[in-house]
Amino acid sequence: MTQPKPKTKFTVADYMNTPDDVRCQLIDGELILAPSPTTRHQRISLRLAVELTQHIERTGLGEACIAPLDVVFPDREVYQPDILFVSNERRGIITEANIQGAPDLVVEILSPSTQRHDRGHKQDVYAERGVREYWIVDPDSRTLEVLSAGANGWTLTATLSAEDTLASPLLPGLSIELGQVFAD
Image (cartoon, rainbow, N blue to C red):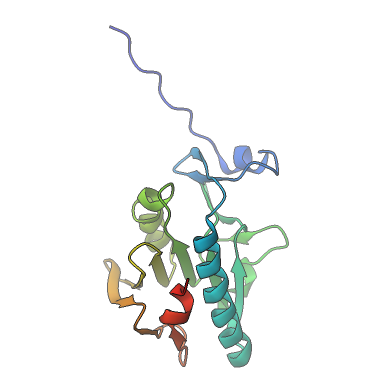
């Protein structure tokens, strides 16, 4: 009986040497290839990013960024969240090349190829590394979950539908009509 070969664990340095035209993330030392997002995914991402960016610019709270942009955690983790926010207090993690550490807010829009990671290992790492708020957007069910960091991991703050208005404990005054975000 043959033993299965152990999987090679890649490092951040290995990831940084992948070709620029290869869209992937480094999740628990494994290079995960990702297909291009769907049109619906991109519409939702754009609408959320515009609303979030306008609020952040109006209030001067920090900076929002969109994918593809690497969020680098030491060792074996490099993610490309769909949208992220870094507060002025954490601005030092923003470099010319990438984000070095935990953004304050991470937004992941689920797709069949990413859902397992977004709700699994990545969600755990985001909590462990200090992300303060995590939005999980499900285009199929037209819902958005707001998770807030707590002493024992994530607390589900809200599960919102297309009929609801998004408010964020992290971003005072934010108000986004989700019907517009999920519109076809």
